[in-house]
Amino acid sequence: MLPLADQVLELLSLERTPFWTYAISALLLAALALLLRPLLQLLGLFHRYYVNCQRLHCFPQPPRRNWLLGHMGMIEPCEEGMVRVSQLVAAFPNTFLTWMGPFLPFLSLVHPDYLKPVTTASVAVAPKDYLFYGFLKPWLGEGLLLSNGQRWGQHRRMLTPAFHFDILKPYVKIFNQSTNIMHAKWQRLVSLGSPSLDMFEQISLMTLDSLQKCVFSHSSNCQEKPSDYIAAILELSNLVVRRQHRLLHHIDWIYYLTAEGRRFHRACDTVHRFTADVVQQRRLALSCMGREAWLQAKQGKTVDFIDVLLLAKDEDGQELSDEDIMAEADTFMFEGHDTTASGLSWVLYNLAHHPEYQQQCREEIQELVKDKPLEELEWEDLSQMPFTTMCIKESLRLHPPVTIISRRCTEDIKLPDGRIIPKGNICLISIFGTHHNPTVWPEPEEAQ
Image (cartoon, rainbow, N blue to C red):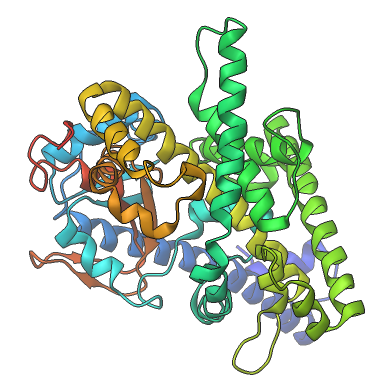
């Protein structure tokens, strides 16, 4: 049989000269090298996967649904899913392993002692994992929720003035105004014969109304009439959660071909247009007036979040760009409305289930407002409501608004019992699981 190079020469009808023989041989070697490289990379990938599986054998795991799906679909974002988490924590009170499909492991941490090595690790060792957080990036950009490292630290320092007591104090009146609007709406709906109200929907609109006023100094009256901007935020919040639980939708090009992906894109455009218009108009006004005149005009007025961001500077005098301000504003609108609405809804739910505690809270508040109307209460007055404060904290334990956060380990991390979390793995810090851990809380499903 002829050598392969000679066969190629004969196939191409080329003369078998030394030049052509060497040229074809070189091309064949190059082609072989190109084929071997991905093969070696694939072998390396499987070897790392095998080694990682061996290192993860020390962690217990519940039975998989099957070899292909792993544990996918076992914990849905609903009441049944949370019950399943409680069952898993009772069986595995420190940590356990689950798999998304056959190749992607997640290590769930459900005890404070096991959370600590990860949560106290530096951002370089345990940064945020973008497998899930990445779904928010087209909407929220590089805001505090999604940024890491030096950028996160710089923006956090620049945003610190936004949380100064003197900035937050006037917001109480805004919260009261939005709450009064909600109460008046409830009374009207009940008088018209509404048998029930969706509490989370109602409170979400109230928190969004409050945030729009505090962040943008804008009143959309969204509690009384439809708002495209508010509707877009509510839709985006829902779509992100749905995407997390659909494996094929994790692939961007597939997701944006779906109806939900197109809805997500349109809702992002709506939110970004609104935020960009506010930032650009405020930036133009600041440029026209000048920084000193702008500050003078704000004396005695409520300073909103956009004002603080426009005036913020770092140690080198560097200001935030319009894109940075938009990202932070969109982040606070998302994080502020959903978590607050969830927490308040569960507080009302739990108090309704414990009327004796509800009555104690009512009496405590009535005692507080004897000498001062509710609308005039200050931050300091909250210290005079210890029982109500305890009820709120216990409700947050039973039903935390954020049930889980994730970190990806870039280095091996040692746990209290000596086991090692291998680098490269994703850790799920289960807030709900830790709050319902029977080794931490006696009778964790009951109000303490």
